Image (cartoon, rainbow, N blue to C red; front, side, top):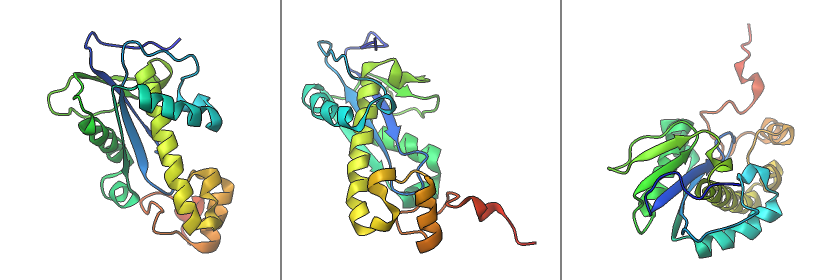
Length: 199
């Protein structure tokens, strides 16, 4: 069973990101404050849930949350500041959109940077321990998937509707054949052979 809260604060928000390991598209984060009455048997770390379950949970979370927000940080920003900083930035931008402002932040993972004067706690595998982080992971994933579906229409040969920009064999074969698009992260190793030097 996932716990509702980590702290004693009434307005505790959970935050998480999706798409960190992708070759294309944004890294997307969400932040969620849940009411103390919130209960859901299905909600878990989004990676443990099927796409169907995530899509069912999304409107439940969005209608029942005290506040929620999500943010895309796009590939050009990722290339400028690196993926770790971009992930933290996406989480921070999501938290700053919350109204009411959270009194405490719980973050999935082990890296975060102080935000205003709000106390926070990083929790490894937090998305499988706390409901608000799990809820944030579902929103980050579903909103990012919807974005990847949209840009798939523009570049169907990469099959982003299926691989969502992750480095699958099919995605890499398409990069090899057609080259990178404006949505690809130029600072990432798009193809394994980028490391090999012609000697």
